[in-house]
Length: 138
Image 1 (cartoon, rainbow, N blue to C red):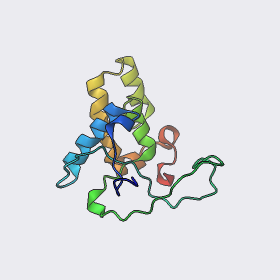
Image 2 (cartoon, rainbow, N blue to C red):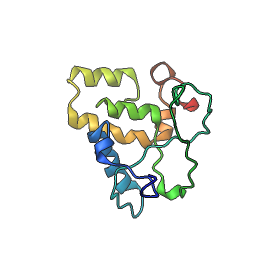
Image 3 (cartoon, helix red, strand yellow):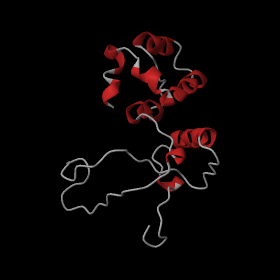
Image 4 (cartoon, rainbow, N blue to C red):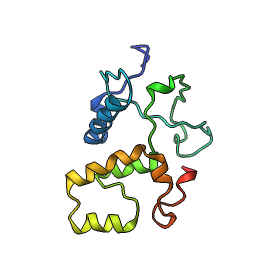
């Protein structure tokens, strides 16, 4: 970043390249004029607590970036639900739906069809508490 003067994503650093490719397609589909010449950079919308142990270990050098990104250039998604995609799992409304996927052996095509629920915040928020927890807090 220091040499270039800007930050960009790169495929070589993608821990889950197939999931990133899926997200890139979603960005092209959902963000107007999205060229995606480089890999996306994942960000969290929150003010960091610099004393939070999970951010960096003692003695490590880290940087906290403050960014000004136009709202129409951001693809918002659920951090917690994104992990279903990283684990190649379906995004389900309730446990019985998960059980149905399990009985069928988690057919890949059907699993991928559920992933767009990642962007359906109302649907995610209305899932049963005993299955999805308190989504409103996420």
